[in-house]
Length: 443
Image (cartoon, rainbow, N blue to C red; front, side, top):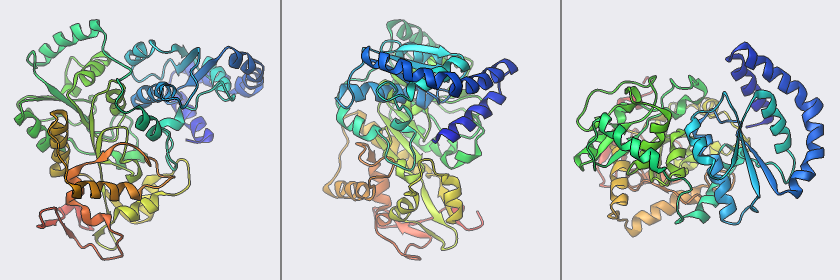
């Protein structure tokens, strides 16, 4: 995200706050260039000498950034990619914190500052000084170029998570599970489907999906003896009652600390391209992701992921992975993917229930130590990863694409010309797979 985009976002958010906060933002912007920036040049040498760092989370209103950016920074230090600091200040705007409970956990490692808009801008000026500031956005918020997290998480693989539940949270969490109707000793999976209601952001609607497409996956989990806890907020679509499924997003027990507890205690996390994934990663919970868009983010910070397929309305065919990735390699740091796809005549297609259930099955097998792949599966996996080149967001990430998804869509790994793929393509058993009605040009 560019500095101009950050200023616009800050201004838009400020106008939605009360008058006091708005005028604090205005004052902070005025003081930033006239006082804070000049002063930062004076203070920076002192902070460098004291080995003090400043990490400002400018997107702390998003739970994913609140969880992943501190996690990446700490792991970057642990794998030797960054020198350790004697003290690191983790700074957030106090009225723009998505979940204050996770900051309670980050206090184990950081000096957390909940700043006013004016104080926040003062820290932002310090964070721009070399050797003092931490470019937190570069870890996971950089689209249009390769993010930092792939190298960090590849090196950190196999080590323990940085966050673990406190004993007090475990005690009250067990009581909360009982109130949710989950029996003592039962295992469960947290399920989250990104919808448009929480942020009301049409610009990222291509990342959304429908909870109905998760029904088969949740049935697969409950058939294996588990429970499903549907995460989210009350703006999400209510679920129809189902055995061993808790629609926690609409439950009276819903709270920030319980959000963390449920994800941290989950056997695995099943979700979409949304911020709650970051909580799972910070607590070391395996994650299976669906509906990843843009395609270049598919190898996200989770363990297994599958992307949305792309449909070309004019040519009436599915677009190959290579074609989509070539389109997404724009060279811009924050491309507008919604506009990019529209101009190219492409429509992202939501993963169908069978593909979502395939991710659930793979995660069940992985967490049971029973997952198997063939040499052909490994060849498909490598063929996909070879399509991601430097400049693609998730290039070099240790994550994997879902095994069954690649088997079913192996033909999209080929370099395809116009018309090569019709309105159907073969799955791994060789049977034709008709595209659902949503693929028609009039859908």
